[in-house]
Image (tube, rainbow, N blue to C red; front, side, top):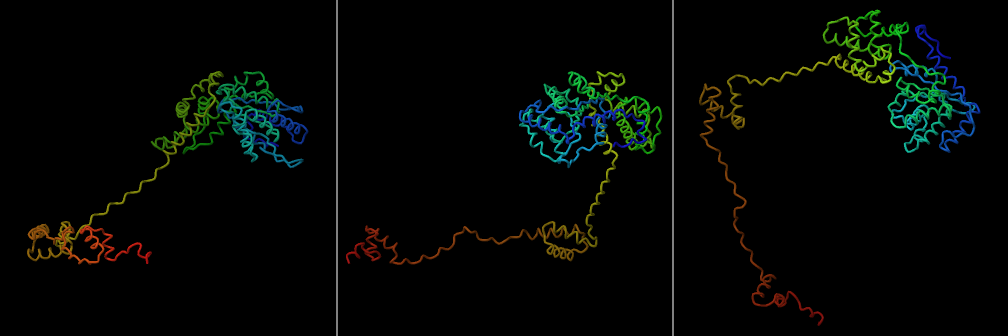
Length: 490
């Protein structure tokens, strides 16, 4: 059973959710998995997969499915309202009897920007995987598969899980689609209703109206339970009730009381578009808070008529033609403005900037004072003289000796005179002469030659050569070598 309406919601009209709830529940009667029609649909899906033809059937099955179109200006609350009504129902029902089945009650997809049937099928498989923890996208969502293969598998998966409602949001994306993609997608959606028996709901802006009315079959199917044109709010009791509820959310220091003049300016600048008036209310408070933080002029941070007009002129600059078309009720001009995302980006950037400005920056840590230079004790200036002598290259112990001698010889001299006296003594001594070390390349005393042994082989060969004999004969005569045949003859 549906939850009862709260007293605060009583002034709100209920015909829109009532029609939508009926559209959700009525066709779902024919999706009962505990019937013969459910099995017949599975048989038909098997044949479609074999033939790769969405129109192939074995058993004719009567369908109760129909289409429904919800058209309204961007920012009027279509998507949010549809989602809230959908969430009155569970997404998945787990059946245990007479067999195990996970039944998907509803599924919401966004229309592909390029109007691609293949992209819609891939999105369908991914959403089913999220709900059921399956791997349909890996099996049937490969880009290598043809469109005919994907659509029959999408129909088969939808029938297997007895899908109760398929919602296609942002149908106006088809207006920008090039080629035959948008016609193919519309034909596919019609086939889902006529052939497969899946209820399809289309949600979009007035920009999609010429597209949906271009062919009779789409217009007829979209009017299965009637299409709903969600008009903007009129300046009536319903609008005033909404403004009263919204006005409670104030961030200023002191709340500003709501007056009839403020109501009128809010409607004039938003023309009954809920998203516009909410953003106008947010941006106006943000600006007055920033102004007070910077200048400190208005401590109370009051919301005024002039403030709302100024913020609307600045923030809604890109939407000025849309606001003008709403004031003139020019439907043809409204078809050109089907997206408020630039305004969403503007509001997001405004809050980011305000947060950065209003957040106090941490104070920089104070730099530590520089360490003072060492101050030597005055005394008699001996330390200063020693430092000066060390700077001249003298060791401290030698500088101490020279300083003691200079003080003894010249008592009463100041530090500068002492340094000058010691420097003069050093000049009189002259440069320090270091002993010259012998060079390595200097000639050394020759070592006496060792006597040569007369039986040295080198001497024997040299003597024989100088006498005209051969070295072999000399060595043979000296008995160093033997004749080669001597041992054989013996």
